[in-house]
Image (cartoon, rainbow, N blue to C red):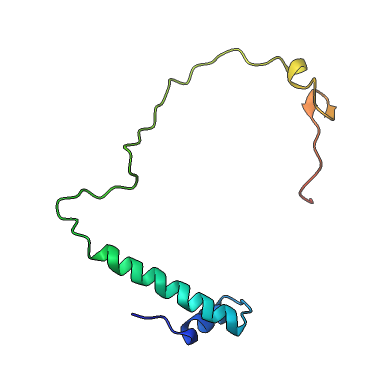
Length: 96
């Protein structure tokens, strides 16, 4: 399957992207190169190969959730640019 310039322009229109002639030509070539490479990968014999999500075996190492002493409030707030009533004071980001 080959992607045409008309396909690229159609997707750009659906995506509300403005694209000049040079860009649509460039992206048409790039997308076709990607599809050509995928076709090469599809020809690789993967018989007997287990599907994986990562090349290395990953395992999440969990530790027990235990209560431990934390940083004292005064020390935590020592370098805060602003504080109020024992809390960090930060700019308001939401109206309401």
